[in-house]
Amino acid sequence: MLKKTLTALALGTALLGAGQAMAADYAIDKQGQHAFVNFKISHLGFSWLYGTFKDFDGTFSYDEKNPEASKVKVTLNTASVDSNHAERDKHIRSKDFLNVDKNPTATFVSTGVKSTGSGTADITGDLTLNGVTKPVVIAAKFIGQGESQWGDYRAGFEGSTKLKLKDFAIQKDLGETAQEVELIISVEGVRQ
Image (cartoon, rainbow, N blue to C red; front, side, top):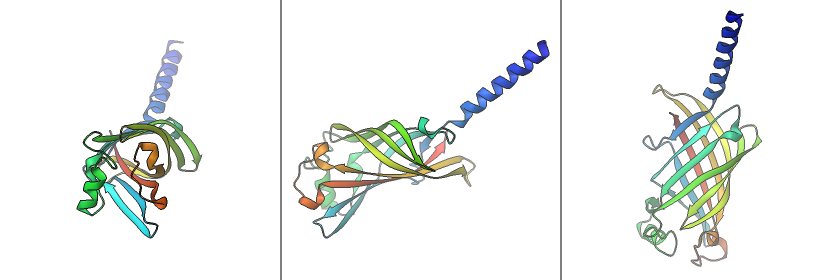
């Protein structure tokens, strides 16, 4: 009787531990430059202006068996904006746009994840940008996971969302075609 009880207890503990081990926490690989927060906005309706934020940090948790339990948190240094044009970047940092002196960071904290298909999900969360917090939805896609050549375990995702500038108190008149910016996010995380 005692042997059966101990065996059942050991099996239950092993199963519980295995279930908990499925969820993992990851740090975004900022050091290796395997993560990007890029943006795209219309330039006068003639072309696209692309840019990136060079300095950001974040974490995510991911459970392949239960993706809806995943979580994401990212903090971005707004002064790190780079559109490959120094004068334009200076203007983007000004109070006309990101107002980096007053709002040096932007943050995204997920509030929910909803699977939309095999390897895809909508990540809902609160984005704080230019001192304004609004809910946004990032359409995310799982890229892959596994052991890396450096001996650690990694997982990667990409996602995108569109933001209306006026929703984040960016009132600079850029013309009819430039009222919305698309964020394109690509992250590779190292399991902690």
